[in-house]
Length: 268
Image (cartoon, rainbow, N blue to C red; front, top):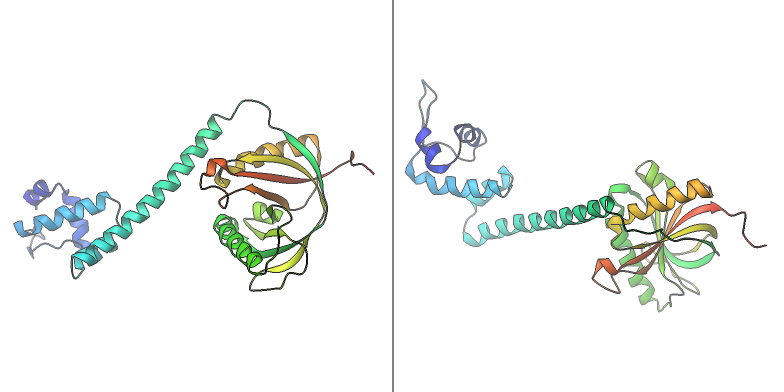
């Protein structure tokens, strides 16, 4: 076992663990001492296992690779794991960029405006979602909504938007709505229905970049609204002025975020 450890660069502790989980079993085990014996024929298998584990492949998946019936099946399993690693790497890059933006905020004062938003007829899609799932839900729901609006030949009268209940942020689960303002009758198809987005008084901030960083703009807007305005309980809003349908470059995306307030300065 010691020689096999030196040859394969797998520690004795690791070899014991691989034996226990059935990943790499020794050719023989001394029934009296429990000492494990390995053969030179097992060295290539051990090398493959070490490289796959270095790529953080789970033990169960490594077992599946070793048990695959042929090379194409093995390659498919390895390719699937590499795809997962690339997806995780992309998420890490987004998180790193978001953290850099937080540590090095842009200079200057962020502009915040007041806006009176009238009640608006729209096609919409509403669901109760978990906060951890809201971005994935938003992407799918907005795609379904846009497809339905096109299929019904409706004309958008403004940018698409979202309305998010306070419970979604406060309790990690709440009602979310995406909408596209349209004139005329919306035929209910699937999850899409006609609705009226209610009127609101909002403090508005413009967020530039991916929605993964939107919490930074939310923080600025919320700090302003709770310090300089009379913040009222009500859903938060988003208006998607420029997004994935306009450009694949997320740095070029532009979203307006609205915080509900009581406006004493509203014209009569």
